[in-house]
Image (tube, rainbow, N blue to C red):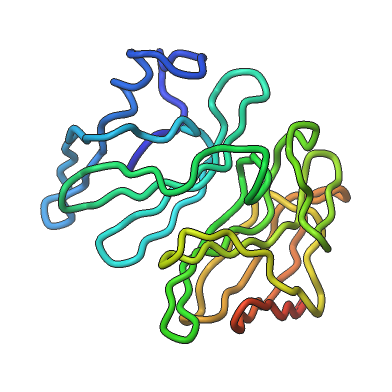
Length: 214
């Protein structure tokens, strides 16, 4: 377990105290229920609050998050190796490409035609410093319904073709894998308030088919 709102965590972009506090991982030993705090190496993400995470094999991937000061949101992607306890930045925070800088989105791992992808959906963040907007996506009250693919083998962000019942701009939902190429999205907060809708998302090559169930 990593990050989150912590007492005495500096509300700054970055400094030595913040880096020190964020350079530890909380490890739970399931057999004994004992928690252990272990140091990490490399530079941890700055988006310490409301990030999205997903695992592939021995790597945990962390996307986005809020920096805990002002309107500082991130669209960076990091990997964390559970064997070496080392952080690696895969894609830096930038307003020039990739998903919107945001938090309270969600992310899953899929495999299509033998290739590993990360899928980032929705989220909340200030749109004024996010360019360019994703074709076909909507932006409403700092919420978005962006769907982005990240191809692990090339380090490339991809904007897929989305058909069917696309969710509206949304954040604070749950996204759960059904199998290697589909997921279920439930709940969340939209411009109309809290949602109880259920969507099935099917991922085919670089396209998404979304079906509203309820």
